[in-house]
Image (tube, rainbow, N blue to C red; front, side):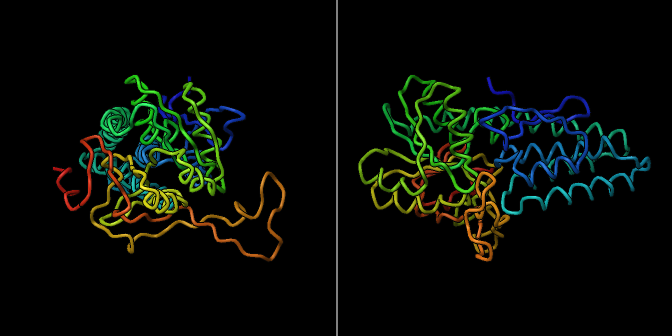
Length: 340
C-alpha cells in the first residue's frame, strides 16, 4: 500500500521522493524549509493538491523552527520563508493557496505560541481536507465513466499528486469502486515520465488494468477507436483555460476532433477565477530535462531545448470539470457560483 504522499510527524515532514519511483519507494524526513523548497523544485513533491499541502506545511514548519521570540519579527520571519516557497513553482495555484491559508491563520493570533499552534492546526486541516475533497470529487466524476471505459490520462493526477486517492485517478478509482470495469491508457508524459513512472505505478498497485504509451500515440489510438474518454487533472483553472502538464492541450484538440469527451478533475482550490490565461506565467524548466536521458546526452551540445512544464487548454475544448461540489459543464460562466 502506498503511504500518504506528504504528512507531518511532530516537527518533521515526511514525503515520498517521487523522483525515485518506480524503482524505489523512499520516504524523506524533512525538518527545514530549504529542504522542502528543494523537494518542490526537484519534483520530489509535485501535483497541485500535494503542493497545496506542502505549502501549508512549509509555513507551519517555518513557524515551528523560527528562532524569533517577539511576535512581529516572528511573523516577518515566517512570511519570508513563505515567499521563498511560493516562487518554487510559479504556475500551479495550489502552492500559494496553501501558503496563504496557513499564513492567514497564523496572522490571526497575537502571540508566537498561538501563531505556531494556529499554523500547525491549519496545515493539518488542509491535509485532512484533501482526502475528503478527492473522495467527493471521485464520486461526482464516477458517473461520467461508463462501464467498460477505456480512459486516457496524461501525467499523474493520482494519490501521489494529492495526500491520497487522487483527482483524475480518483475518478477512475471511484468508478472501479462502484463496480465498473475500467482500463487506463497512461501517456508516458515527457520529459520526466510522470505517467510511465507514477500513474502506471499507482494503477499497478491497485490492480487496475493499465498500459503506457508515448505521448504522440494518443491521437492514433483515438483514431482506432481505442479511447472512450480523456480524464486529466489541473494545476490551475482560470476564467478561460485549464493549465496542466505540457501535452494536455494536444490531447484536448485530438479528443474534440474524434468526438471523445475530455474531462478535467480538480478541486476548487485549483480554480483561479480572477485571472485569464494570458496573465499566467508558464514555468520553463531546465533544458537538460530534454537534452539528456538516463545520464546520456540525447541532444547535440549547443542545440537549445525549450522545456515548458505546462500548457493552457481553452475551456471550450473541455466537456466537463469535475469538482468536489459537483460537475460543471459548458458554458463555464457559472464557475463563480460554486464558491458560494
